[in-house]
Length: 383
Image 1 (cartoon, rainbow, N blue to C red):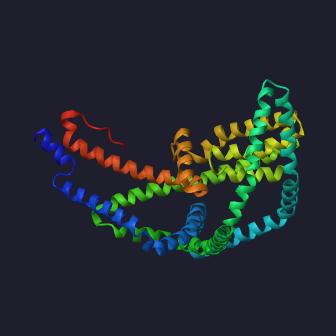
Image 2: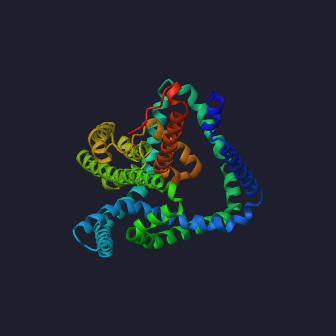
Image 3: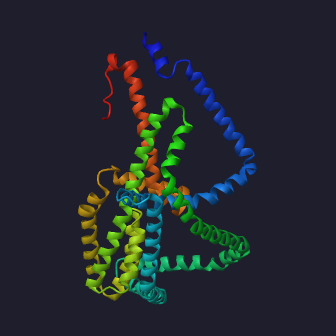
């Protein structure tokens, strides 16, 4: 078989014409869709309505399914195990809320009232520092620039008010979607926990028998990657919140409980979340005293050291090998495309795409070795 004929067979042989025809039809379909997209608006509404509770349910599924499986090993019927687990979590959350709500409410209300004062005082201190530093000659120019921008504020407010009705509609729609998602996601979660394996088998049966083994392998890898990331990241974020709470109490930082909760929630997003979480704590600390800021820095460095060297390696394990630079780029791109949801779900989405990419690359290497391996050297295949 000559080289040109081998290459033709490598890229698909006569099937390449069917493949090209398929992509041409896909392109035509996309072009037509852009012209009549309004026809699919009801479908878009359905998808955007279903997506939030389903996403929440899948996140909770990966957290709770191992516990349900463990209860099954103790010969507790899966249905009863799910009911007991949901009742236990509901009761536990209710108890925690009832116990901690007064303290959280007091701290949050106090922080809302005093935080503007902290920011204002920080602004005064920065202004005094700038006026007595090498930046003093540029202070007046910067001040005038800020005032010019503020002079445009009434016009911006007026234009915003003119669009107020649309804004109110958007807010109402968001509130409605949130309430619907919160109400419906427990039901979706219940059926995922109860019939998750059935859904998997039905999905596999949709594909031709020839490809089912490959589909099982890809779904299993996706399940492992996404499940390990969600479980690990939630646990890591919780541990970070607990460690910071202890550290804040030791150094005597105000609003320790509230700031620790903020840090735990934002730490769900790697790298970017902890950076955001330190900002309010740093503002409060620097207004109190420079020494408090130094103590906060020591606590933060200590927590990050423990998280990076002990917590994450032991909890996250070696399931997901993602370079930090890749994580940052994924978060930036996903956040720009899909907003907050993209930032939260960017890494699990990347894990899914990477599993598919690895699978396709394996197939590519197998095909290359078949047609060119003996003559030009074969790819090393993954175990």
